Image: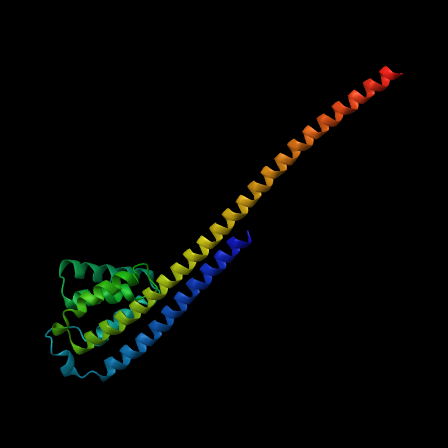
Length: 209
């Protein structure tokens, strides 16, 4: 029972670390991206004709973080269908940013990392703002995924240690029970022999008398 409580505590601690790091990374990302968006000049985003500006992406990320489940579902579904039906650097980036934003059911840091890597292979047709957004979020997802992997390994290690300890305890109990059975059997044999000796002695005394 004590081992199971330790596993539960370890799991909660590991997941707490993941959540705290994620929230911290998200706050830092928003700050960096906001700064980037303010410092970008119109000519930066005009390099790629028709590409959304930084404010468009940031506004959507804010709405995804708002907690409005209906709005979140609409934005995520639209981003996913856009990346599927008209795949391109901009539509994939939009989808990747949605995947990388916590607080909604579509949050998927592992898939976000994969899509962001793919987007950055097409950096030549991204605006500087889009490149910055993709790079910041990719770094964030890599750190989060590494931390999640460490947490899973820690939980698995604790679980394995607890399982091993439990198996050892069960083995000791089985050994103790087997020893008790042996002792009970020997005691029963000894009592039978003692009864037999007592009976023989009684018979001898009776014959002598």
